[in-house]
Length: 219
Image (cartoon, rainbow, N blue to C red; front, side, top):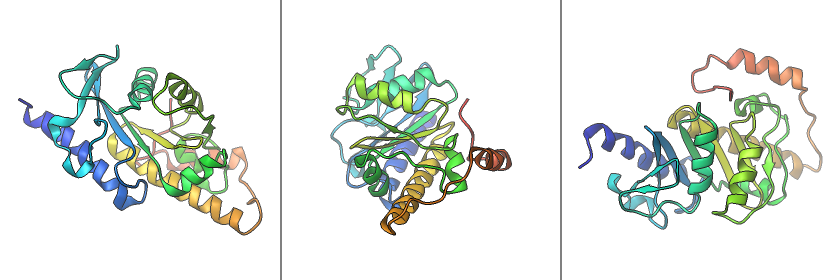
């Protein structure tokens, strides 16, 4: 039986999953979320509608890829495991298929520094990882490379990933990334590439907003 604290932690993941549609960063039952949990992590199960998900349905995995107890983890468990194992400062991962971010990912475009909030992802670009089939080690490797010194990336012809020190910060960043993607696509629809900020300008903003609370640069 789950303890009250464990049940609350799992329910927070379910609540975040259900809020993704409302926030405009997901559609239907696509996407998945994980949170660090002691010497392993909790990840959403595969093929289960969010509105039917219960705390007991979340799957606990060890960092040796073993499933603890019952349940089938999301098909994307590999990149959740690899990111959490490689990035000790990351405690939550949000993967979604937002319309604007995914449109850029289909075009295999990274998001450039068109707005100062690009720094929320840890640098002056949000990279687009090369395409690989969902659920594969190749996709995980590509995502991990695109997230080097970053807290978010796009996945070519697929979607996006946002990570954070907490579930709240990862969700916040996912919304920020989708906003940046929408702004970039709006510029492109006007028929031109937008003028871009310099790396120095982005770094200056990053230093100013480092104490905002939700924002934290990757280490």
